[in-house]
Length: 193
Image 1 (cartoon, rainbow, N blue to C red):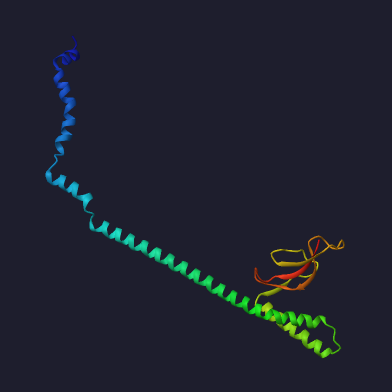
Image 2 (image 1 turned 45 degrees about the vertical axis):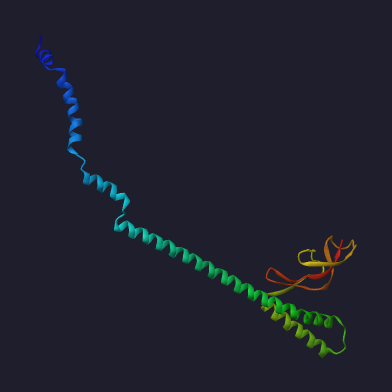
């Protein structure tokens, strides 16, 4: 028998098992659980430390601050929109009250007169009124030959005229006015079919 085989025969199977088990038992022996350590392990998740409390309070305060800032921004924007709307409505209401003056000046210009000074005075008044209205953003619309738009024009008459395009304005009885995109007064027109 060789020396190697002889050494193998002298080793018992119990020694081999004991060596295999030894590392596992050492790990178990090195960390004994004490009652104080168990109590600390159970206390840590139950009671947050001061830093965690402070971070949580800071996060809540920051969230409240962001919400307050967003509410203020929304309030500011809403107030500005309301302010702009009030101004636009005031300008539109004022313009509605001045439109009969415009209509009377337009009728006066359409009538023939021999008094040139009178005619010149009416023309100057009409020019000044249109300049003021344009400065406020009020523009007239609705001229003969334009296409008919039911959202801007009020058709009070229809005619059949082959010389005109279909759905075009043949005659304007009363001019319409807009303030930006808002229609202050619809134009009364005669439409060609």
